Amino acid sequence: MNGTQVWIAIGLTVAGCYLVKLIGLLVPAEALERPLVQRLAALLPVALLAALTAQQTFGTGSALAFDARAAGLAAAALALVLRAPFLVVVGAAVAVTAGVRALGG
Image (cartoon, rainbow, N blue to C red):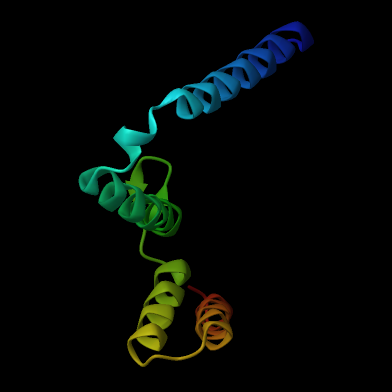
């Protein structure tokens, strides 16, 4: 891509984001007050974060990978099951991931 194509892509992205925001503002309040919409709005961020976490943890190009990242995620999940505070969850994930990488994983 040359410089002009990059700026065109940036401009189209900006316009697309603005249009999505504008469409969200134009949705009638009655539609947003429906129970189904409220349930979906509450669950959608969790589902998107879970999908992003899974993709970043287990994806390498177009293949699945089970490496130090997966071990760190498992440690974080275990800490969550044990109801550890958030900083402990993050610390466990970091420590396990670093340990597995140090051992050659």
